[in-house]
Image (cartoon, rainbow, N blue to C red; front, side, top):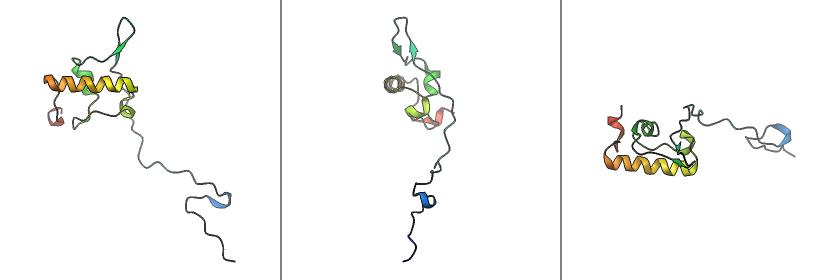
Length: 100
């Protein structure tokens, strides 16, 4: 009988898959906190705080994902709304070419 073919990902006779190498390098940007806590203990994001909102945008002007900026889901929704309000009022650009 011919030898049995093994899957290229298995590591030898055990049949367990070999550990995968990461496809991309880990993103090493330090996580920035934009959400603040009011005196009542509620978390909010201020749309007028343009300097901290710029840290949540990429160089192209796109809003960064939760995994990149380290925000919780409800914080990410507040960040998104604050950035959209600031863009509408002209405090932030829609396109990132003027951000540099």
